[in-house]
Amino acid sequence: MIYEDIKLTKQGATATITIDRPKVLNAIRYQTMLEIQDALNDIGQDEAIRVVVLTGAGEKAFISGGDISIMAKGTGYIELLQEIPKGQQVLFSIENFPKPVIARINGIALGGGTELALCCDIRVAADTAIMGVPEITLGIIPGYGGTQRLPRIVGMGKAKQLVLTGEHISAQEAYRIGLVDVLAPKAELDAAVEDLCRKIAARGPIALYMGKEAINHGMQTDIRTGMSIEAKCFALCFGSQDRVEGMNAFLEKRKPVFKGR
Image (cartoon, rainbow, N blue to C red; front, side):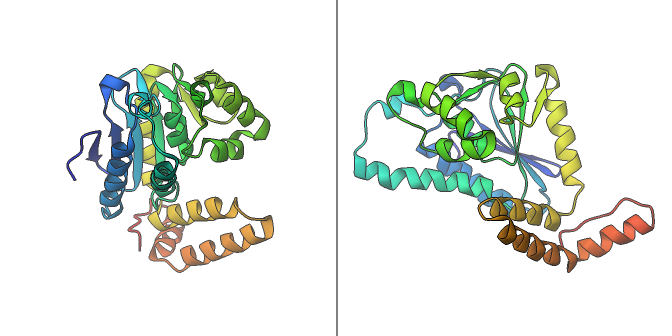
């Protein structure tokens, strides 16, 4: 696929998907979602890549939201019921991607921007970033998981406050309520992301995938079922060559060389 809305770059063990629509502050449209999915398919087949970064081009915006110039034209109910789940599926692809995905929130992250960040594994934000789900001010509600992932991360009361008021919050407030995991000064954002990528890339690919799998699936169940999921994921890790390498490296007092086997 030839990309119009994103850029896909790879450096070492890190792949970066950059939303690149500067004229609309990286607002997303359906085409953007299709391109993100294609990029994920590419990355998923590249064994050299251990971690993925999702970010926005430029200094002003991560993703400013959905492209209102397109949405304002209106769409029929039946068409929306067919199109929205397709876009939601891309977010599920990010959430359940076998490699960790980090949101590098470099600026405005509103509406769909916050929703895309929510489905990433870890959110790193510049201290100048602005977040929120202001769809209510347009007479609609979030449609890419904002009403579902937000309460699971920040709690029901805070999620309702954000969804029902549409208010914007600072990066500091987002960090306080757990919407952001790492807060960095704007000038140090890249260093914070690179440090996190480096730490994750040094871990075993199988264990990384199983760690995500256990948490994601376990959080949708009761604790006993979650523990059962964890046990299965643990057992799969234990049968890997990476486990043998990791434990031997520990005993031999050297750094492990994981190969995802």
